[in-house]
Length: 368
Image 1 (cartoon, rainbow, N blue to C red):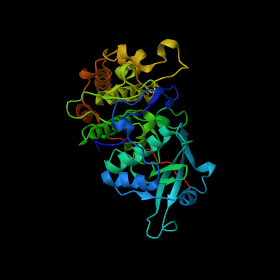
Image 2: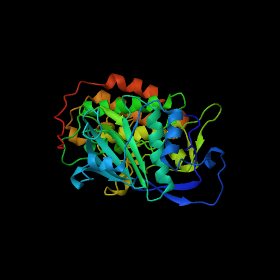
Image 3: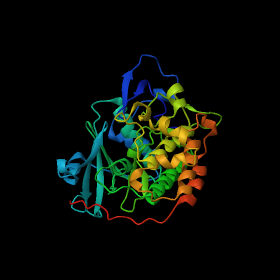
Image 4: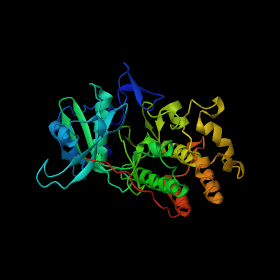
């Protein structure tokens, strides 16, 4: 994985307020040899590249098969979407191919629009999730690369994203125990990436990229911006700035120097969202409260005042000492000095004692 083709880019990307990166082509040549490598441009080249590094079996689907899986991309099958395109629920079985076991899936259709960056992000997911396997990473079932179509087929996560659950005005509030379960499992996913044989930096860790199964088991998704981490004597990876306002580490925004500590900062922001029930960036709030970290950071080390920023929808149903310990952990993750932030494995160790048994509400039912 250390020789992955997507290390670096000859494009410049700016972080956008809606969470996806906008791109502008620049005329300056690449400074890294790897950056000039040609991206696979046809299915055969993708398979050749994937086979060099793959450890997970992935199925290749035709676009006609995806139409069958999604009911011809029915509008009422749409699970969500974003700058990349739309995600549809779907179903595969032996009617599609003999021998296939019945399985609910999520079909992510990339709106490539002849964009090099869109192709790059699609390919990054195919390569990374073809190599990596962990209980807290979403499982990639297969993909489609046909003409202009770039599609990914994942395991179906019935409860959707942490974002859609945490900030919903319709669903019941997530309990404290479930929030801590999500935090621990997301931390385990990041720790696994950081400690892989060739470290991986997720680079876009946020609540919308953490998905939940029926039992609120958390899995990281959307590896489109992931990067191989520094190896050997390297202290960082130099990249174009990409990510999401409110989550990106300040030193990364200033320098483009990417390290595992960039993910740790983003984890601290997500943990703060779980604690407060507030979005990392909310322009509808008063000016001094719009950026969550600016508003909450001064209170995290104050044992009494930190209780005042806990999500009111919890109704006070949480252990105060656990809240205070969580707040201190957030404080360390958000340290302006990246070298002073804890490692993800240490964060996992800190969250383990804060777990309490959770009673799970019924899972949503989807008709196929």
